[in-house]
Amino acid sequence: MSKLKLLLLLAFGLFCTTLRAQQNKDNTYHWFNFQWMGATIDGRAFDKVAITLPVQISGLRGNFIAQFDLGSDISQLYGNTIKNYFSSRDALFKKLDTAHRSTSDDGSAEYPIKGLKVTTGGYTVPEPYLSDNFGDEVPKDSLYTSSQKNVGTIGASFTKNKVLIIDYPNKRMCLLDSVDSYWSAKTTFVDCRMGKGRIQLPVTINGQVNWIMFDTGASLFPLSIDSTLWKKIVDPHARLDTLHISSWGQIVPCYGAPIISDVYLGTMKMPPAEAWYNQNKRLLEFNRQEGIAGLTGNAYFLHNIIVIDFKNKRFGVVRD
Image (cartoon, rainbow, N blue to C red; front, side, top):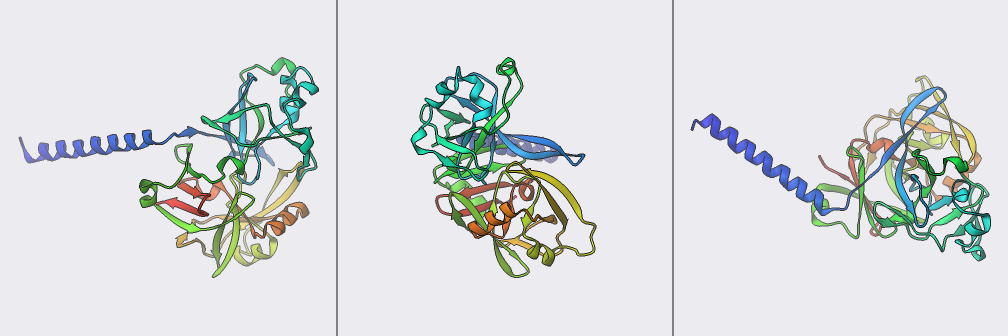
């Protein structure tokens, strides 16, 4: 056998061994897939506006999805969307703990759910709520059609004290109880802060650390901050970009421009991106109450695998 053939055989064997090892490693973890939801905003098409997960609700039949939104501290079902799956409002409210009513940021009444099991990816969603009079109603003649019904939000309660791995390129994620040796060896972590189950990242801009909440419900903008910080880090001569987005039932004008300052997460230099700001009082008050400078989300990490260790307050990016 010639040396060339031998080298080719060895290379092929090494490739097959590596492939089998990766397949075995993948089988070690319970991956579940997510989908991107697109939208048209101000006449412009965006294909990655929100992450959705398929969900199941005990006793109900339908093609259900929910937005995966780590900016929400709770998981919830939308009352308007699921009410027609019940024979009456009383039948729905029998599944709720009405003695512990609370009010959401948008003013909707929220009730702990006690008689419905909500699952996604084979995991039970802990402590879900029902947001009354919220969401889009599903007509009775469309309850069981094949179209997807967005019935709620999977929030930070789902990942409490867990390790979340999001594999953006392969549109999948998994939950672990702790970071094992495999992911520990491949991941560069930064220490973070937590607030109401939501993780806050130390993002360094112009030598100053800014605490930025990581929010999977924030897919459009790599960085959404207040106008004061925005003016310090963007190109002042760039053409201003504008989008009108829906937030908590309000249409909010947002303004963006290219970042010219270096942005770091730990020692990792973030790729070129735009920063955005808005002047919505409710959103700015939310940032003030949480003690953060703004939000980041999926847009910065679309080509990465990230590992979020909620138990130990760490956020990591897997090295190539």
